[in-house]
Image 1 (cartoon, rainbow, N blue to C red):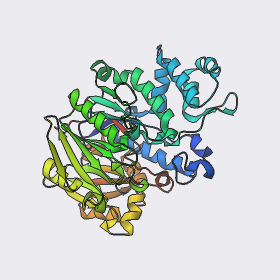
Image 2: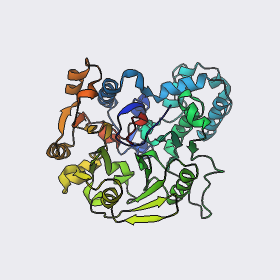
Image 3: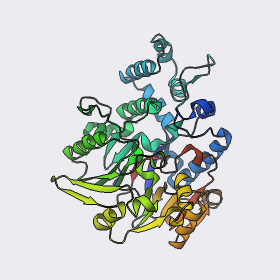
Image 4: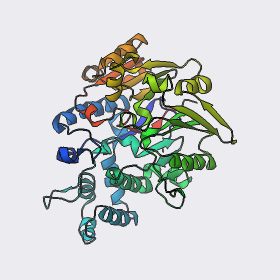
Length: 419
């Protein structure tokens, strides 16, 4: 079962992916091609990520924090044509001989999943595929919308193998049975339903550009990574199958520094949003269009105006970096606006965004070091029951260099309803 009708309802289960050793194979020459701005120090990144995972396990229960690689292993064990189709597509995409397919098909599912994710075949000590380092950002691979799911489509070829593996999991894994049977899986990779425009514009919509903020409102960014044509087709499909009543387009600058809408704002409580002030609050280079199922259109000059007029008139905006330059630019770049909310008023941030933390404190939050949080709550059952207004700050020297925060590193499956 899957269900999310907000960005802030108490998180019950999600999908993550621990950075794998493929990240350690990124060279300076190929970093840009693989969508990294720099090479990272993998051992330290892994240590930081493990703290993130431990926080999630304490808050949700270990059994509710799903590794995408493990889900892939379970999917590969299921007898279906999907496995054969997956291997063919990957070998063609990676320009490898199809003769490799017979070898791969005979491997145990855990070994095959490891090769498909990391690219490394340990038994033969060979690298078959490039790494897919961005797989750690599971927000981008799919998004839960009420009781349905959108299988997204990446803009860059470096992420296409992620997409193929995700499609395999969602097409076969029992977690998604109910949505599949109800016809509530929207796969943006189906060319018959989501073809290029007659002018050649491609379909691409990434999960960082999709937010389910209310049972009747889904936000979709048109950005560096998500196209206008992709938005149009997805909007129409969402309304056609009745998943939502309002599809909200957020136009933002097509710039690396704000590649998705979750790099410039995320909601952390019923009336609190952390944001990059110039774009979200002042409306610079941005506007909002609300498409209703009845065919009406409403336009707002900023994300702030949309939220206050359609969602909650009391919506409060907490400014990353204090809302002034150069600090707001620095802390937006290091994901000061990109937080995963695990219950209303409790969210996970990066510790390096110090001024953003001070803004949270002014708004009544307590900012807690993640390792201190683990030490205090790891032996307490259901710690979220007693926690209010808290920001859990992760160590983030290397994680932040990968250009994604805790929101990016999560794909929520189930949240408690906020309706």
